[in-house]
Length: 247
Image (cartoon, rainbow, N blue to C red; front, side):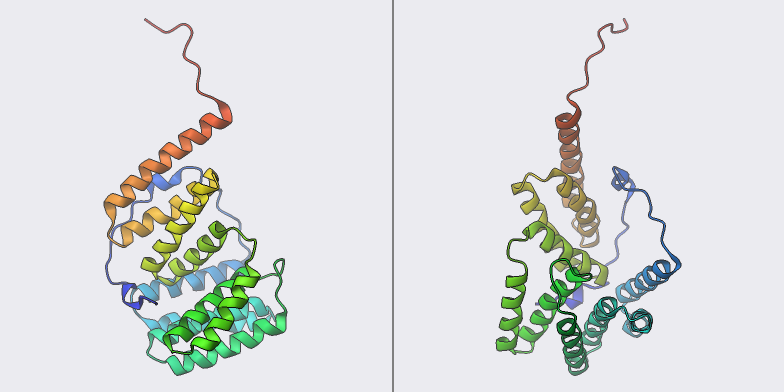
C-alpha cells in the first residue's frame, strides 16, 4: 500500500560529493525538455513541502502542453501524476475518474514493447492496480496485474524495479522507492551486472539519507567503491608496480 505520510516527513542534508564518480555529462536539453523537466522539478519540490495544490498546478501545465502538441504518451504520464496528487489531496473519487481516463488513452495507443512511453504504461498499470486494491476493487486490479505480467514476461526484473523506483522517487515516495531500488540492486547482483549496480547505488544512497538511514548509505558508498574498483580491475587489470621504485 502507498505510504503517503513519508512525503516530506523529514528533511536531511544530502551529500552528493561521492556521487560524482562515473556520472555522464549533463545532456543538452531542448527548450521543450527544459520546460517539462523544470515543471517536474517544481512539482517534486512542492510535493516534498506538501503543497499539493502547487504541485498539481505544475503537473497540469505539463499535461496541457503535452495534449496541445498531441503527445499522448506524455499526456497520459502527466495525468498519472494528477491522479496521484488528487489522492494526496483526499479526493479518491477524482483520482478514480482520472485513472479511467488514462486507461482509455493507453488502450487507444495499443502499446507494445518498442512503443514510445512503454515504461510509463507499465508504471501506470502497477500504480492503478495498487489504487484499485486500496479501493477494494480487487477484480479489476487483478486484471491489470495479469496484463502487466503478460507485458513484462521475459523482461529483467532489474529494469522493471529500477524504472518503478525512479518514478516513486520523483513523486517523493522515498520509502517505497527504497524498496524497489534494493530489489533492483539485488537482481543486478544476481545477473552480475556491475554497471547497473553502480547506477542503482548512485540513486539509492541519497534515498537512504533522506529516509534517515545514514549509516546504511555510508556502507553503500563503500560497497559502490569496491564494485567500481573490481570492475576497473576486470577491464584493465591490476596496476603494475613501479619497476624502479624511488629510494
